Amino acid sequence: MLSKVLLEVVASRQPRVESVALAEADGRVLAAGILAERDYPPLARSIRDGYGVRAKDLQGALPGELEVIGEVAAGGYFTGTVGAGQCVEIMTGAPVPAGVDAVVMVEYTMREGARMWTDKSPQPGDFINPRAAEVKAGATVLRAGRRLGFAEIAMAATVGCTEVPVFRKPRVAILSTGDEVVPVEQTPEPNQVRNSNAWSLAVQVKRAGGEPHMLPVARDTYADTLRLVEQGLQHDLLLLSGGVSAGKYDVVERVLADCGAEFFFDRVLIQPGQPVVFGRARDKFFFGLPGNPASTMVTFELFGKAAVELLSGQSESPLITPFAQLTHDFHHRKGLTGFLPALLSEDCQKVTHVRWQGSSDVPALSHANAFLVAGADREEWKAGDWIQVLLR
Image (cartoon, rainbow, N blue to C red; front, side):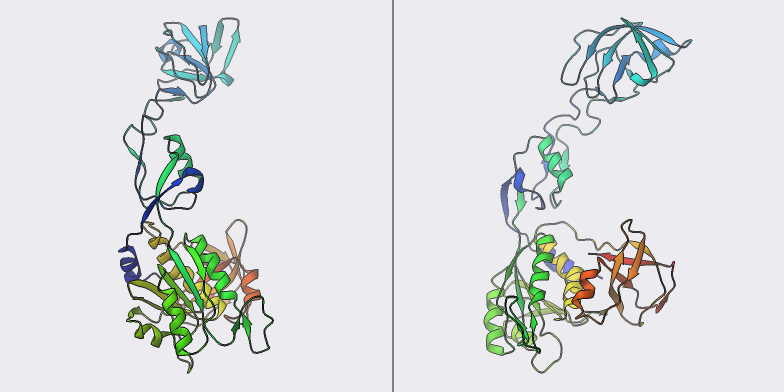
């Protein structure tokens, strides 16, 4: 679903770089590659508790018998050399002594005093991680453009990084529009709604790696919308919710045009969320998202999320839509790709369409944990059919 122009245009902007402590780097995007400062492991090491042996000593009649001449624990060394008919007791992670070329797991051995017996015939290399088996000194262990999670933080810590260079989070302005929209703390009249879109977008922006900034609601006047759009364009990305369809009071596109906007697209063939505007004004990117909550959520996940991720320095932004089996028959109008609220099972194998009253039905959306992706060229699915799912 992602437009090629979105990827090309947003990815062309290089965010600024800053250095942060490793403890603060979770979720940030790496701005420069990190190299291994030594071989990993730096020495050959055992990957099992057992006995370090010379494999050829145990290739004859079994059980084989060897003399135990010492032991080596993780963090220690055995300074001697293991000769013919000898072995050492060795622990997981311990350096492999000279002469040893295999490890026999302790479960397959018997010991009495300084004698060890086993009925296993190991091959050279068994249960040994050779030096540099994981990575060689000087090799890149983390590439620029990678978003850091717990495994990447562990890698940075392994090679001794206490600080890491990351791209600055993009500042994302969120601007809801419409006379019917009131702040969350205000009691709405029957013809009004609370500004839930700004709050859902703030969460989505934060999850995508951005820094959300909520602006006041813009009234349905040219002057008020212009004033707040100009504030929003001082950020890296402006997200507008509402005011982009063809209604009499939808002034957003006119305001953007008067700000010198270049429009890349203004409609997509999806449901909900057809009227989506993407462009650039005053060298800042913007999205005009539809005002109904489901439309706002879906269009951000399909388009806005990619923009935030790319502006934060991420090298790519794949849209992941795995398959799950429908629990019941399902119908959808052909012609538009549908993104409809759904409940995905805990094992991610089964999916159920959540009945709803349209794209303003926030209660239905809150009961869902995913969206069904109903293809535009098909109108009927049966229980048991596989269908794509957009995770939430």
